[in-house]
Length: 330
Image (tube, rainbow, N blue to C red):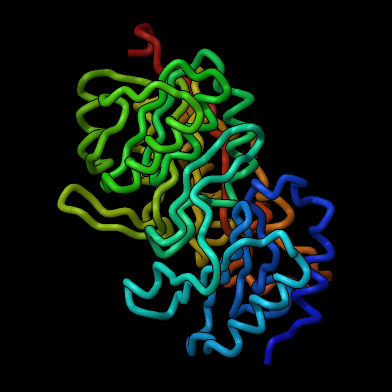
């Protein structure tokens, strides 16, 4: 049974936040915190995205009820997509339920290209909206490495803020091609050398040997990934990633460390960060919260698989300030 009252209450709490031109990206319902863990609902521009986490995916009748509910409440919608998470790889990319999915959106004056059927998620992470704002405000005159860049939105935000160079690094060319579409939408120049299709461990080792550094390094890896060059495991081995990334940060620069593993608690992640800071050359400068529409507005306790405190969401974002040894320190 569809809990329509919960969905309406969640939407009501967010109405004043939605942009009047309907070009932005927002979470309309967070089931983990608002009473129905099987569902998350997003809107990207004018496209409704139903993210179905149920073990037995919603049938067409239930999906029709959901689409009609949101079309009634948000008459400006022009399309709807469903993404069943407990399905085969192809099905998880989603299917169109109605209309045509949008191909672009706008956030804080920056345009982003999107392909809602490219991967199992939307390709545009709503939980890093605050980080995009931080980068836009902090990146002027700086160089940046966007490691595990995916579709490049963080790098685009930095360029919009006046970064002098952004290197987008990802193993998948298809994702970086979408980043190039974002550049075109904003009139950013596309330099081939700034789009690196390569494994992080290989690229990081090469740049370290070359003594190449960046003012800002964003480390936003997937929860788990394996390659011949190394393994990404945010729950068990985040410290290893930090050690690979920190030599790439210039003296006085910032390493933005993100851990979005649901089963990695905030306390455990903070312990890893504090351990990395023990030598005195790395310090925790700030934590960037996830926007409230992602966290949810219900008064009940959230049903996160692991407590993210002191972060406000399982996407845990920390800004680390980097110092490098001087020649006198050897």
